[in-house]
Amino acid sequence: MSPADIAMFISLVIVAGALFQWPMGILSDRIDRRQALAIIAMIAAVGGVLMILLSLMANGFCSEQAYLEREPLQSTRLL
Image 1 (cartoon, rainbow, N blue to C red):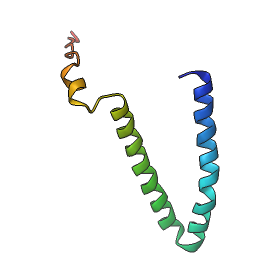
Image 2 (cartoon, rainbow, N blue to C red):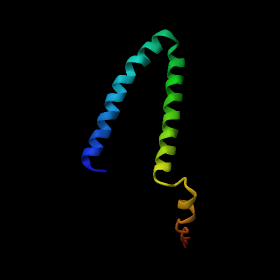
Image 3 (cartoon, rainbow, N blue to C red):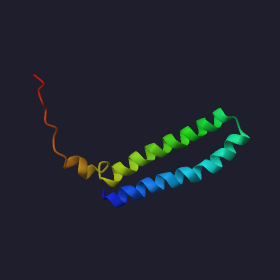
Image 4 (spheres, rainbow, N blue to C red):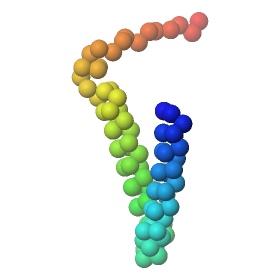
């Protein structure tokens, strides 16, 4: 990634976090704070898993062709 791409990613994370605080603040005012945190944690966990799966699919790790064309792992001896 170029420095411009990294800067854009960091900027998007900061802006998304700032925008996400407003609805989560309203949610935590309406329900118990522990329930609100549990909901937020579940949303974050699902988002994290989706990002991992999408990055794997984008890199071709989930395709059968990429699996068949991969290099075999080299075994290394520690002693």
